[in-house]
Length: 417
Length: 113
Image (cartoon, rainbow over all chains, first blue to last red; front, top):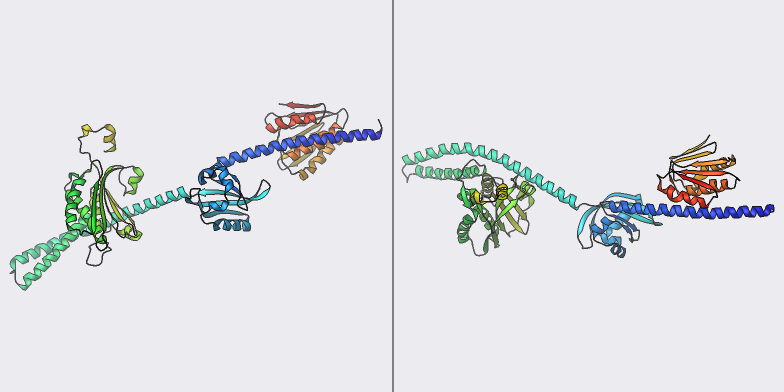
């Protein structure tokens, strides 16, 4: 074999070797590529948040399992839409692209996103430019803030409720002290005036003045009684009673005094409405709430609904209601379709002497008394109000069973039913 | 002893034993130093060459190409050189790729442990 032939043979062998190397390298890189793709899909489908990869034109290149669940589009569904469709405000995607264009990465971009069924939710985006399948793309990870916002709202509500409870306790303690001392002073004034009245001729000028002073002292005593009712210094007679029966009787009286432009509806749900309470005070609760409802409807007309229903409060729900213990309650609701109240008014509505009525039309003690009565009955009152829709006061009284204990089941007794 | 160290990998050669360990995932153009290292190994014309990759955790495609072309094909041109590759069953890539080297070089001994 000549030198040239040997060189040709060597080069041929080399080319064969390179061809085989190419095959080996291609096989190796193919396996690596496949493994990386599987890894990417496994990681992205394990992510508990939506992950999307889009072209700059808005075409979807990749969406993980969570994105399909969150937005409600199938894999093919994503292929048919443009990324802009996922934003409540289409302009937000343009703003995101601009921000990424400036910084190549955006973290915590707040936005409202839209699901396939049209529902909107608050979210924050973490996006960056990447090369995906050979083209410049946008990778976005989306955090749905709905649950976080719900939790935050709940926390704020609990905080507000706690502050309200503490405030009412402080006001109650202060008002109780004042009312007690003032009551003692009034008793002396009242007693002396009565004695003076006995010594003066009725038709005398001095007699008329003392009579007028007695009237004022009487009014003062009523205010003191209401203050005492608010701050639980006055004990009532507690006995088993049916809230439904008391409401039915009280509403007869209220109906007779209410103009026909105001409709009064009464509904008692099935189940017991037995509580331990003072019937006079329960009547007072209903009267005060209905009087307020009547007041807001007196010029425009409307509807007052009185509802009674047995409810069972679990722990979180009970906590929202002035730290009530979980258990069985009778809920007395007085609801009107009046103008409603703003947040500031709602926050102060149970404070003694707080009133939205013009001077001379209200003492501001009606709802404070309701609050006090409910506290004395180991219950709670809460208010729901919306401007333009109306107001509802929900009174919760601990329920008692009218059946003797030997007729109740074990679980009923444990639940306090 | 010859030695080459880089980001996450180490290569040594002494008396016919070439040891490659760590992770090799360089870009193709960054394998120039390793190609030069292999050139020196082949230039020493050992009668036996054992390539120990039991601790080579990862090797990318460019690394495969560098070993195939810069080491195996060059060594194959040296007459009567005995070549052996020591591999590890711990690494899937070795189990999948190294046996394909048998197509490349005649009389190549591949041993897994």
